[in-house]
Length: 90
Image 1 (spheres, one colour):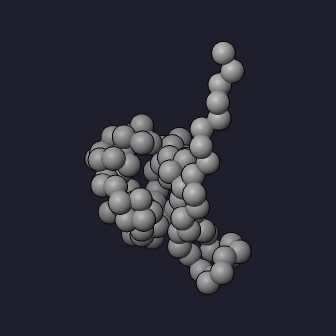
Image 2 (cartoon, one colour):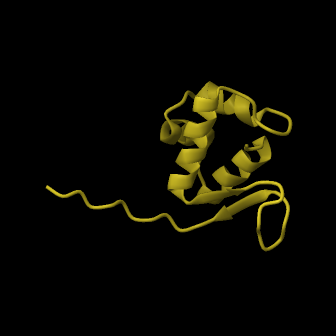
Image 3 (cartoon, one colour):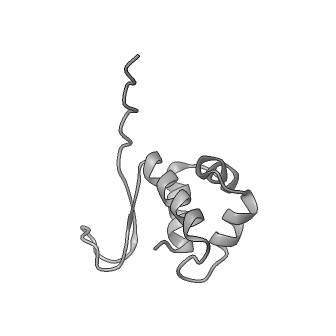
């Protein structure tokens, strides 16, 4: 689960706009706009939500849900350094 506020905060931490997040997630820009205009938890197609969350994870964002362990408690985002891509064997 992700909230619209978490999406906006995650983009702010990454210093990217809605278009860039849409590109990273492989979804349309209007989809990101609708998601961020939601009240509370973002609702939508599970596959689309998964794509957005995975794109944020790849970029170094860890989403923190209610009751999740975090230093300050509550809901929010935490920036974690992205792992370098694994080298492919040729």
